[in-house]
Figure 1 (cartoon, each protein chain N blue to C red):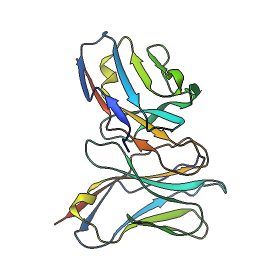
Figure 2: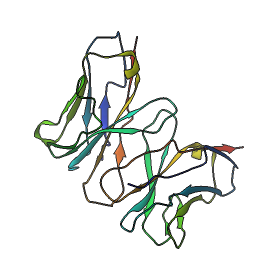
Figure 3: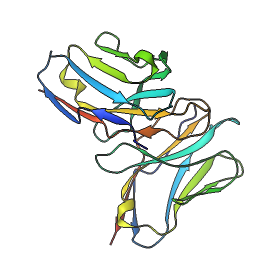
Figure 4: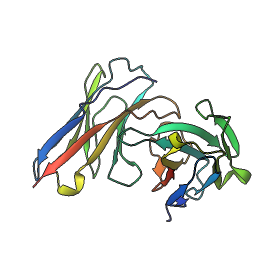
Length: 115
Length: 108
């Protein structure tokens, strides 16, 4: 069974440019998460989807960040325009959505460098 | 969701048991304790979780105190490949809040 797939693995852009990250969750997983991880820190939740609905986006900086999960499968996270402080690893995770089963499956992440 | 406290770093000799502590004194009755680990340049990996009883799987054992205010993750025979950051998370919902974790270094 394929795991969570993210792309691109690495991205280098100049500030003020747009960037997009793509995530394909494990087949059948209804719940999808986007996390941001700064160097030396734990992952921080940006947004959680249940199917195509964003049920928790309270930590998403909506002035420059946007996300979508059309058809409740793949998801895209966009930053426009990017700032120097956005340099981080963006992690996608999925789960079956059953409460307290505990297991989030993470992708390898997309490392963003903003110059 | 309750917050957790973990030591920032620990060392363990290869082949010995690694015991990683976690304090969660404000845990509520419906909240589970989860452990994840993150090996360098990879996404976090689920290890184990529990509510009240001790749990064991092929990766580790989880010991939860009777008052549930603390827990210990045990890697029974640590190998060099267990070198990673270990996160203890308490959650009763779908929201999983990661702290800074414990950086475990297994020494040859």
